[in-house]
Length: 265
Image (cartoon, rainbow, N blue to C red; front, side, top):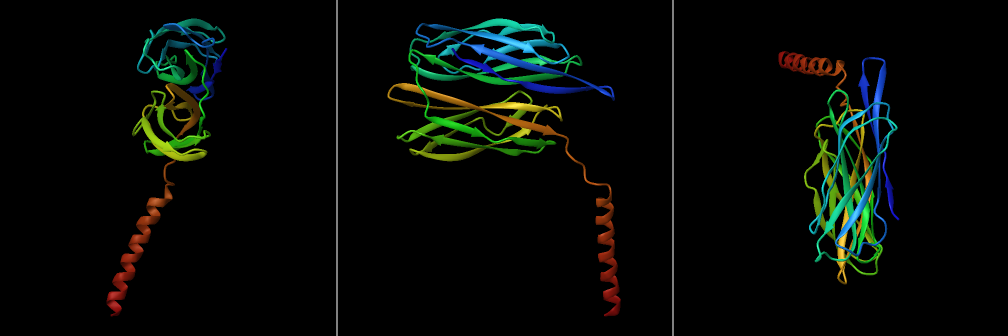
């Protein structure tokens, strides 16, 4: 039995002296190896915050050969768990092996501001396999509307080289230059790569989970692993008020010195 539990906390300021928040904790249970043409992924979703979440909607990000319906949760009050199930349809021609499945939970706060949270779980189809590729995702802090690189380390622990497909999955409030890269990693070695991230509609003062999935194939089997990282979104610090005045004063001083030098000549 596999379970995934992920905590994503978003603080929403109310007034000048108090704050409420929504804290989504999804848990996915998919059982063991799936041999048939469908899998049932049982979802338990809890709001551990102190404010209701509205218009809660859960969906899976599925690749080719897999499909499922979304779950409309509705209002999720603090401390009241929701239980539902995704029925995942499996194409008969899909390659056996392990698959990493991202889950996106969309919701709104009392002010109608949209938020999203992303997590992942593993699904073994027809045969249980263990990926020998691991990921490490660095933490990142974003300020303002600028771009910044999210750094990843891909490690190949196998005795064989692999061509590895790396996909980035983001909450809807963040965006990236690309969401997929492919790299060749020789045996028993590691390689670094990056994605350029920027804030699309992220709330300053919030932290967002991002998910990276690494996949490769060999001997007729599909191998997949995932890792999560944290992106902190902060207010962009304005320049101190004295800096523009100091720059102007410095330029004026240079002009005066130039004029004095000309007269002396």
